[in-house]
Image (cartoon, rainbow, N blue to C red):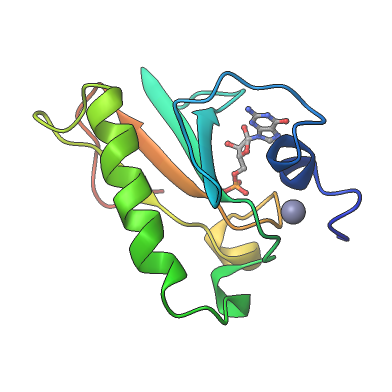
Length: 114
Ligand code: 5GP
Ligand code: ZN
């Protein structure tokens, strides 16, 4: 999927409007359109990487975790906790090939996942 046609790149470029939970020059987080928990937010880097296997910027994941921290705090999830998920390729259940962190909370998360 090229960055031109990528749905999350369109969100990152502002071509598809979302109500951001958190946004800076490098990341934006917004609610998942098909929530799997009372709170289900996606955090994306604005740069197009298909999967975490394609990330070549070693600092990006650390900065992404900072953005997860800020998003979770804004969502009121920091106290009770939440689950952060990155699905990778077919066996990981990835459907959108633009790196994204799922932030899931507002209920107890079962383990193991399906
Ligand atoms: P994946 O299965 O790749 O880990 O997760 C992709 C997620 O993106 C799914 O949870 C799906 O509901 C969400 N999603 C796909 N397209 C859109 C969209 O256009 N807007 C929003 N807000 N979420 C999307
Ligand atoms: Zn993209």
